[in-house]
Amino acid sequence: MIARMWHGTVPTSKAEAYRKFVNDRAIPDYQSVDGNICVYILERVEGDITHFITLTFWKDMDSIKAFAGDQAEIAKYYPEDKEYLLEFEPKAVHYEVVGQS
Image 1 (tube, helix red, strand yellow):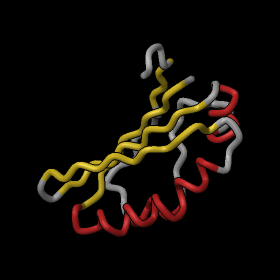
Image 2 (cartoon, helix red, strand yellow):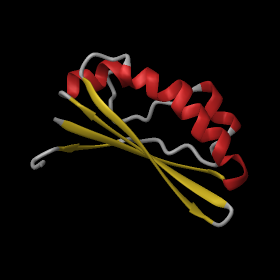
Image 3 (cartoon, one colour):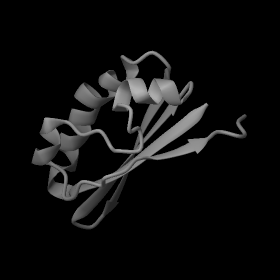
């Protein structure tokens, strides 16, 4: 199993709208790909900036490539992200899951 993690920031004034967007659009997109095990969206407010971490779990790298494309380390963005994100982190990070409960 492989964990894929991406980090983004939005103005706190837009955090509620971004949260709705990821729940309505992004999570279903992840879940539509065969090999996606689960999706977690983490949120942390730091004053005027809200951090979002997308943490997804996948069967294997082929499953991730089916979602993100052949260059799986490049972050996948949606057109709507332009309305919310302060910066566009270029990469997603992958971790092999070596322990679980």
